[in-house]
Amino acid sequence: EAEVAQSPRYKITEKSQAVAFWCDPISGHATLYWYRQILGQGPELLVQFQDESVVDDSQLPKDRFSAERLKGVDSTLKIQPAELGDSAMYLCASSRLAGGFYEQYFGPGTRLTVT
Amino acid sequence: AQSVTQPDIHITVSEGASLELRCNYSYGATPYLFWYVQSPGQGLQLLLKYFSGDTLVQGIKGFEAEFKRSQSSFNLRKPSVHWSDAAEYFCAVGTYSGGGADGLTFGKGTHLIIQP
Image 1 (cartoon, each protein chain N blue to C red):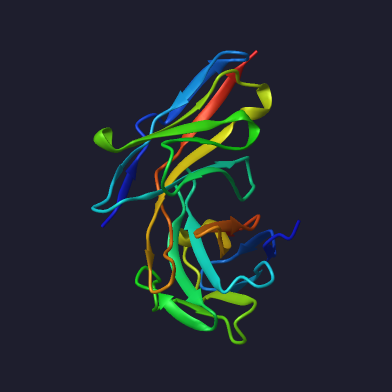
Image 2: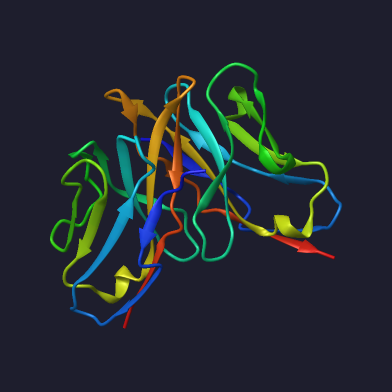
């Protein structure tokens, strides 16, 4: 069964450094999402892509976060500079239409620790 | 804007006992509702979903959930839990616009502990 791939799985970085995460959605899934999950909380949407276009980035802290999906397939989320409060799990998901219903499939996540 | 409340942060259940996890939502239209499970350090796995039709939905791993519009609830149930069910459980509500699914709004989660 196809899965959403993410790398790296774990990342430790120092405050003020740049960090990037990569996501490869399930083949054929046009919609891709990045979520941030702070320890003890539910995931919160950061950005949503439809093919290569951003559909919703209202919750993305644009002064330090950027996201791209250049060819409408894989995607990169970048943080520059990283802050202590960015320590969290970053989850990527993709969705498809199945039986008139959209299902989101999540990757394993990238656990970021900022020191 | 939609919201999801999971009133129980932690729940402890004995192995073999029944389970019910509560979820209340707030949304102005017909909601699309989901339950996900997350094991430590892992991503989220979809347990079940409600789109329309029968208000009692069956999912994987023996879980079911019932949509009650009058109570704005979508509680998750399992008749007999196994030690492997210990995990974090998230309820989520989804909306759809522009021909695609919007990002999900999640509750804060319920941590399920299984006692031997």
